[in-house]
Length: 362
Image (cartoon, rainbow, N blue to C red; front, side, top):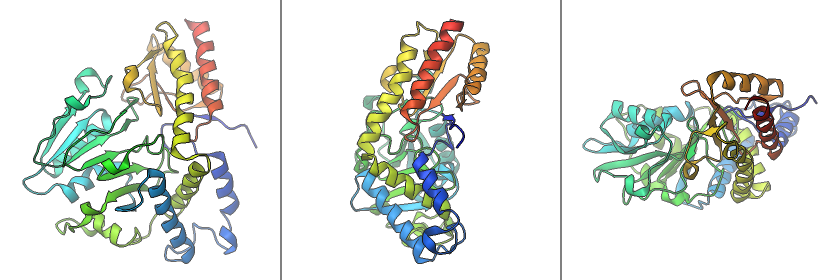
Protein backbone atom coordinates (compact mmCIF):
# COMPACT_ATOMS: atom_id res chain seq x y z
CA UNK A 1 0.00 0.00 0.00
CA UNK A 2 1.26 3.50 -0.83
CA UNK A 3 1.83 5.89 2.07
CA UNK A 4 -1.40 7.30 3.48
CA UNK A 5 -1.76 11.07 3.27
CA UNK A 6 -2.06 13.19 6.38
CA UNK A 7 -5.69 13.99 5.69
CA UNK A 8 -6.89 17.23 7.30
CA UNK A 9 -9.73 17.80 4.82
CA UNK A 10 -12.75 19.57 6.34
CA UNK A 11 -15.24 17.25 4.62
CA UNK A 12 -15.48 14.85 2.98
CA UNK A 13 -12.88 13.92 5.53
CA UNK A 14 -10.69 11.15 6.90
CA UNK A 15 -12.22 7.75 7.54
CA UNK A 16 -10.72 5.10 9.84
CA UNK A 17 -8.32 2.87 7.90
CA UNK A 18 -9.84 -0.24 9.49
CA UNK A 19 -13.28 0.80 8.22
CA UNK A 20 -11.98 1.35 4.69
CA UNK A 21 -10.27 -2.03 4.70
CA UNK A 22 -13.39 -3.85 5.90
CA UNK A 23 -15.54 -2.08 3.33
CA UNK A 24 -13.02 -3.03 0.65
CA UNK A 25 -13.22 -6.67 1.65
CA UNK A 26 -17.01 -6.67 1.53
CA UNK A 27 -17.44 -4.40 -1.49
CA UNK A 28 -17.83 -6.97 -4.27
CA UNK A 29 -19.52 -9.74 -2.28
CA UNK A 30 -21.33 -8.68 0.89
CA UNK A 31 -21.36 -11.55 3.40
CA UNK A 32 -21.50 -14.22 0.68
CA UNK A 33 -24.71 -13.08 -1.04
CA UNK A 34 -22.99 -12.84 -4.42
CA UNK A 35 -23.66 -9.11 -4.76
CA UNK A 36 -22.33 -5.82 -3.51
CA UNK A 37 -24.38 -3.77 -1.07
CA UNK A 38 -24.40 -1.20 -3.89
CA UNK A 39 -26.57 -3.62 -5.88
CA UNK A 40 -29.07 -5.06 -3.42
CA UNK A 41 -32.63 -3.93 -2.71
CA UNK A 42 -33.20 -1.60 0.21
CA UNK A 43 -36.11 -3.94 1.05
CA UNK A 44 -33.78 -6.91 1.46
CA UNK A 45 -33.27 -8.46 4.89
CA UNK A 46 -29.54 -7.74 4.61
CA UNK A 47 -30.05 -4.01 4.21
CA UNK A 48 -32.95 -3.75 6.67
CA UNK A 49 -30.64 -5.29 9.29
CA UNK A 50 -28.00 -2.62 8.59
CA UNK A 51 -30.64 0.13 8.68
CA UNK A 52 -32.01 -0.92 12.07
CA UNK A 53 -28.58 -1.61 13.58
CA UNK A 54 -27.21 1.78 12.51
CA UNK A 55 -30.16 3.55 14.11
CA UNK A 56 -29.58 1.63 17.35
CA UNK A 57 -25.84 2.39 17.32
CA UNK A 58 -26.49 6.10 16.87
CA UNK A 59 -28.89 6.25 19.82
CA UNK A 60 -26.52 4.20 21.96
CA UNK A 61 -23.49 6.42 21.26
CA UNK A 62 -25.56 9.55 21.95
CA UNK A 63 -26.75 8.09 25.25
CA UNK A 64 -30.40 7.97 24.18
CA UNK A 65 -32.29 4.81 25.04
CA UNK A 66 -35.80 5.75 23.95
CA UNK A 67 -38.05 8.64 22.96
CA UNK A 68 -36.15 9.57 19.79
CA UNK A 69 -36.28 8.54 16.14
CA UNK A 70 -33.16 8.26 13.95
CA UNK A 71 -33.74 9.31 10.35
CA UNK A 72 -31.46 8.90 7.34
CA UNK A 73 -32.05 11.76 4.91
CA UNK A 74 -30.69 13.14 1.65
CA UNK A 75 -29.73 16.66 0.68
CA UNK A 76 -26.98 17.26 3.22
CA UNK A 77 -27.24 19.22 6.45
CA UNK A 78 -27.88 22.37 4.40
CA UNK A 79 -31.27 21.04 3.28
CA UNK A 80 -32.26 20.84 6.94
CA UNK A 81 -31.89 24.62 7.19
CA UNK A 82 -35.17 24.89 5.27
CA UNK A 83 -36.75 21.57 6.26
CA UNK A 84 -36.66 22.46 9.97
CA UNK A 85 -38.80 25.62 9.68
CA UNK A 86 -41.03 23.94 7.10
CA UNK A 87 -41.85 21.23 9.65
CA UNK A 88 -41.84 23.15 12.92
CA UNK A 89 -42.40 26.87 12.27
CA UNK A 90 -46.15 27.25 12.60
CA UNK A 91 -48.04 30.47 11.77
CA UNK A 92 -47.80 32.98 14.61
CA UNK A 93 -44.54 31.48 15.89
CA UNK A 94 -40.92 32.49 15.30
CA UNK A 95 -37.76 30.50 14.80
CA UNK A 96 -34.92 31.67 17.07
CA UNK A 97 -31.31 31.36 15.94
CA UNK A 98 -27.98 31.47 17.76
CA UNK A 99 -25.64 32.74 15.06
CA UNK A 100 -21.99 31.85 15.60
CA UNK A 101 -20.65 31.30 12.09
CA UNK A 102 -21.37 30.86 8.41
CA UNK A 103 -23.60 27.79 8.65
CA UNK A 104 -25.80 29.01 11.51
CA UNK A 105 -26.21 32.26 9.57
CA UNK A 106 -27.31 30.27 6.52
CA UNK A 107 -29.82 28.40 8.66
CA UNK A 108 -31.19 31.75 9.90
CA UNK A 109 -31.51 33.06 6.33
CA UNK A 110 -33.48 29.95 5.33
CA UNK A 111 -35.71 30.38 8.36
CA UNK A 112 -36.55 33.89 7.12
CA UNK A 113 -37.46 32.46 3.71
CA UNK A 114 -39.95 30.03 5.26
CA UNK A 115 -41.43 32.22 8.02
CA UNK A 116 -40.45 34.63 10.77
CA UNK A 117 -36.95 34.16 12.18
CA UNK A 118 -35.23 36.14 14.95
CA UNK A 119 -31.70 36.25 16.37
CA UNK A 120 -31.37 34.93 19.93
CA UNK A 121 -27.64 35.67 20.04
CA UNK A 122 -24.85 36.50 17.61
CA UNK A 123 -21.09 36.97 17.81
CA UNK A 124 -20.74 38.20 14.21
CA UNK A 125 -19.71 41.69 15.34
CA UNK A 126 -16.77 40.13 17.20
CA UNK A 127 -15.76 38.32 13.98
CA UNK A 128 -16.78 35.00 15.55
CA UNK A 129 -13.81 34.97 17.97
CA UNK A 130 -15.72 34.07 21.14
CA UNK A 131 -19.00 32.20 21.53
CA UNK A 132 -22.00 33.71 23.35
CA UNK A 133 -22.39 32.98 27.05
CA UNK A 134 -25.69 31.69 28.39
CA UNK A 135 -26.52 35.22 29.60
CA UNK A 136 -26.10 36.52 26.03
CA UNK A 137 -28.85 34.25 24.66
CA UNK A 138 -32.28 35.88 24.63
CA UNK A 139 -35.00 33.41 23.61
CA UNK A 140 -38.24 34.90 22.30
CA UNK A 141 -41.02 33.26 24.39
CA UNK A 142 -43.03 32.86 21.18
CA UNK A 143 -40.33 30.64 19.62
CA UNK A 144 -41.20 27.35 17.97
CA UNK A 145 -37.57 26.29 18.44
CA UNK A 146 -34.04 27.56 19.04
CA UNK A 147 -31.45 26.54 16.44
CA UNK A 148 -27.71 26.40 17.11
CA UNK A 149 -24.55 25.06 15.46
CA UNK A 150 -22.52 23.27 18.14
CA UNK A 151 -19.20 23.30 16.25
CA UNK A 152 -18.33 25.89 13.61
CA UNK A 153 -16.40 24.16 10.84
CA UNK A 154 -15.21 27.26 9.00
CA UNK A 155 -14.43 29.53 11.94
CA UNK A 156 -13.02 26.89 14.30
CA UNK A 157 -15.15 27.41 17.42
CA UNK A 158 -17.08 24.93 19.56
CA UNK A 159 -19.64 25.35 22.33
CA UNK A 160 -18.48 24.01 25.69
CA UNK A 161 -22.03 23.94 27.08
CA UNK A 162 -25.58 23.22 25.93
CA UNK A 163 -27.68 26.40 26.13
CA UNK A 164 -30.71 26.35 28.41
CA UNK A 165 -33.70 27.34 26.28
CA UNK A 166 -36.36 26.65 28.89
CA UNK A 167 -39.48 25.09 27.41
CA UNK A 168 -38.51 25.98 23.84
CA UNK A 169 -37.19 22.96 21.87
CA UNK A 170 -33.46 23.15 21.11
CA UNK A 171 -32.22 22.00 17.68
CA UNK A 172 -28.53 21.39 17.12
CA UNK A 173 -26.57 21.21 13.88
CA UNK A 174 -23.74 18.90 14.97
CA UNK A 175 -22.31 18.17 11.55
CA UNK A 176 -18.65 18.75 12.39
CA UNK A 177 -18.72 17.84 16.08
CA UNK A 178 -21.03 14.86 16.52
CA UNK A 179 -19.50 12.02 18.56
CA UNK A 180 -16.29 14.01 19.10
CA UNK A 181 -17.08 14.32 22.81
CA UNK A 182 -19.94 13.41 25.16
CA UNK A 183 -22.96 15.73 25.21
CA UNK A 184 -26.26 15.63 27.06
CA UNK A 185 -28.31 14.74 24.00
CA UNK A 186 -31.52 14.73 26.04
CA UNK A 187 -31.34 18.53 26.15
CA UNK A 188 -31.99 18.60 22.40
CA UNK A 189 -35.33 18.11 20.69
CA UNK A 190 -33.47 17.46 17.43
CA UNK A 191 -29.87 16.79 16.43
CA UNK A 192 -28.74 16.59 12.84
CA UNK A 193 -25.45 16.08 11.03
CA UNK A 194 -24.11 15.53 7.56
CA UNK A 195 -22.12 12.30 7.66
CA UNK A 196 -19.00 13.49 5.87
CA UNK A 197 -17.07 14.74 8.90
CA UNK A 198 -17.28 12.23 11.76
CA UNK A 199 -19.84 9.64 10.68
CA UNK A 200 -18.87 8.35 7.25
CA UNK A 201 -18.79 9.43 3.62
CA UNK A 202 -20.98 12.10 2.07
CA UNK A 203 -24.41 11.11 0.80
CA UNK A 204 -26.48 10.76 3.96
CA UNK A 205 -27.60 13.12 6.72
CA UNK A 206 -28.66 11.87 10.14
CA UNK A 207 -31.49 13.48 12.06
CA UNK A 208 -32.30 12.38 15.62
CA UNK A 209 -35.69 13.78 16.57
CA UNK A 210 -37.60 13.55 19.84
CA UNK A 211 -40.94 11.78 19.54
CA UNK A 212 -43.03 14.76 20.68
CA UNK A 213 -41.73 16.76 17.69
CA UNK A 214 -43.29 14.18 15.36
CA UNK A 215 -46.85 14.06 16.69
CA UNK A 216 -48.30 16.31 13.98
CA UNK A 217 -47.92 15.67 10.27
CA UNK A 218 -47.40 18.99 8.40
CA UNK A 219 -49.57 18.32 5.34
CA UNK A 220 -48.94 21.77 3.89
CA UNK A 221 -45.49 20.69 2.68
CA UNK A 222 -44.49 17.96 0.18
CA UNK A 223 -44.42 14.40 1.47
CA UNK A 224 -40.66 13.91 1.11
CA UNK A 225 -39.94 17.06 3.16
CA UNK A 226 -41.94 15.86 6.18
CA UNK A 227 -39.95 14.30 8.99
CA UNK A 228 -43.02 12.25 9.87
CA UNK A 229 -42.83 10.53 6.47
CA UNK A 230 -39.36 9.18 7.19
CA UNK A 231 -40.03 8.45 10.86
CA UNK A 232 -43.13 6.36 10.14
CA UNK A 233 -41.29 4.38 7.46
CA UNK A 234 -38.00 3.83 9.32
CA UNK A 235 -36.24 5.93 6.64
CA UNK A 236 -37.34 3.45 3.97
CA UNK A 237 -40.11 5.50 2.33
CA UNK A 238 -37.88 5.83 -0.71
CA UNK A 239 -34.52 4.31 -1.62
CA UNK A 240 -31.97 5.48 0.96
CA UNK A 241 -28.23 5.97 0.26
CA UNK A 242 -27.50 2.35 1.10
CA UNK A 243 -23.72 2.39 0.83
CA UNK A 244 -23.31 5.61 2.83
CA UNK A 245 -25.43 4.18 5.64
CA UNK A 246 -23.44 0.93 5.56
CA UNK A 247 -20.22 2.94 5.88
CA UNK A 248 -21.73 4.87 8.78
CA UNK A 249 -22.58 1.56 10.43
CA UNK A 250 -18.92 0.55 10.26
CA UNK A 251 -17.73 3.94 11.59
CA UNK A 252 -20.15 3.82 14.54
CA UNK A 253 -18.93 0.31 15.39
CA UNK A 254 -15.35 1.60 15.18
CA UNK A 255 -16.17 4.38 17.66
CA UNK A 256 -17.76 1.90 20.04
CA UNK A 257 -14.91 -0.62 19.75
CA UNK A 258 -12.36 2.13 20.42
CA UNK A 259 -13.78 3.19 23.76
CA UNK A 260 -16.88 5.14 22.74
CA UNK A 261 -17.40 8.88 22.67
CA UNK A 262 -15.51 9.57 25.92
CA UNK A 263 -12.39 7.94 24.45
CA UNK A 264 -12.83 9.95 21.25
CA UNK A 265 -12.87 13.16 23.31
CA UNK A 266 -9.67 12.23 25.13
CA UNK A 267 -7.89 11.49 21.84
CA UNK A 268 -9.24 14.63 20.20
CA UNK A 269 -8.09 16.83 23.08
CA UNK A 270 -4.61 15.33 22.92
CA UNK A 271 -4.49 15.75 19.12
CA UNK A 272 -5.68 19.35 19.06
CA UNK A 273 -3.38 20.30 21.97
CA UNK A 274 -0.35 19.36 19.87
CA UNK A 275 -1.29 22.00 17.30
CA UNK A 276 -2.64 24.65 19.67
CA UNK A 277 0.57 24.42 21.73
CA UNK A 278 2.62 25.29 18.64
CA UNK A 279 0.31 28.25 17.94
CA UNK A 280 0.42 29.50 21.53
CA UNK A 281 4.21 29.27 21.86
CA UNK A 282 5.01 30.74 18.43
CA UNK A 283 5.35 34.31 19.70
CA UNK A 284 2.66 35.51 17.31
CA UNK A 285 4.02 33.84 14.16
CA UNK A 286 0.89 31.66 14.24
CA UNK A 287 -2.23 33.47 15.46
CA UNK A 288 -5.34 31.52 16.40
CA UNK A 289 -8.61 32.79 14.96
CA UNK A 290 -10.64 31.91 18.06
CA UNK A 291 -10.26 32.84 21.72
CA UNK A 292 -8.94 29.88 23.77
CA UNK A 293 -12.19 29.34 25.72
CA UNK A 294 -14.16 28.88 22.48
CA UNK A 295 -11.70 26.81 20.43
CA UNK A 296 -12.79 23.70 18.58
CA UNK A 297 -11.05 20.36 19.03
CA UNK A 298 -12.26 19.45 15.54
CA UNK A 299 -11.38 22.45 13.32
CA UNK A 300 -8.20 24.30 14.26
CA UNK A 301 -7.92 27.66 12.48
CA UNK A 302 -5.05 30.13 12.44
CA UNK A 303 -3.26 32.79 10.42
CA UNK A 304 0.35 33.53 9.53
CA UNK A 305 1.96 37.00 9.31
CA UNK A 306 1.04 37.40 5.62
CA UNK A 307 -1.07 35.81 2.90
CA UNK A 308 2.12 35.10 0.98
CA UNK A 309 3.45 33.04 3.88
CA UNK A 310 0.10 31.24 4.15
CA UNK A 311 0.29 30.27 0.48
CA UNK A 312 3.85 29.10 0.98
CA UNK A 313 2.77 27.11 4.06
CA UNK A 314 0.04 25.32 2.08
CA UNK A 315 2.39 24.68 -0.87
CA UNK A 316 5.12 23.19 1.30
CA UNK A 317 2.62 21.20 3.36
CA UNK A 318 1.35 19.52 0.19
CA UNK A 319 4.91 18.54 -0.66
CA UNK A 320 5.11 16.88 2.76
CA UNK A 321 1.90 14.88 2.17
CA UNK A 322 -0.43 17.11 4.23
CA UNK A 323 -3.83 17.47 2.55
CA UNK A 324 -6.61 20.03 3.13
CA UNK A 325 -4.86 22.70 5.22
CA UNK A 326 -5.99 25.76 3.26
CA UNK A 327 -8.63 27.74 5.14
CA UNK A 328 -12.16 28.01 3.77
CA UNK A 329 -12.26 30.18 0.65
CA UNK A 330 -14.51 32.71 2.43
CA UNK A 331 -12.00 33.45 5.22
CA UNK A 332 -8.57 32.29 4.06
CA UNK A 333 -5.83 31.38 6.50
CA UNK A 334 -5.07 27.81 7.58
CA UNK A 335 -7.43 25.15 8.91
CA UNK A 336 -6.59 21.69 10.20
CA UNK A 337 -9.67 19.49 10.61
CA UNK A 338 -8.72 16.78 13.10
CA UNK A 339 -11.87 14.67 13.16
CA UNK A 340 -12.18 11.40 15.07
CA UNK A 341 -10.55 9.34 12.32
CA UNK A 342 -7.49 11.60 11.98
CA UNK A 343 -4.72 9.73 13.84
CA UNK A 344 -2.55 11.22 16.58
CA UNK A 345 0.50 10.66 14.38
CA UNK A 346 -0.90 12.99 11.71
CA UNK A 347 -1.38 15.81 14.25
CA UNK A 348 2.10 15.20 15.67
CA UNK A 349 3.56 15.40 12.17
CA UNK A 350 1.70 18.65 11.51
CA UNK A 351 2.91 20.18 14.78
CA UNK A 352 6.48 19.27 13.82
CA UNK A 353 6.05 20.74 10.34
CA UNK A 354 4.66 23.98 11.80
CA UNK A 355 7.66 24.30 14.13
CA UNK A 356 10.06 23.62 11.27
CA UNK A 357 8.28 26.11 8.99
CA UNK A 358 8.49 28.86 11.63
CA UNK A 359 12.21 28.26 12.17
CA UNK A 360 12.84 28.86 8.48
CA UNK A 361 10.41 31.74 7.99
CA UNK A 362 9.97 33.42 11.37
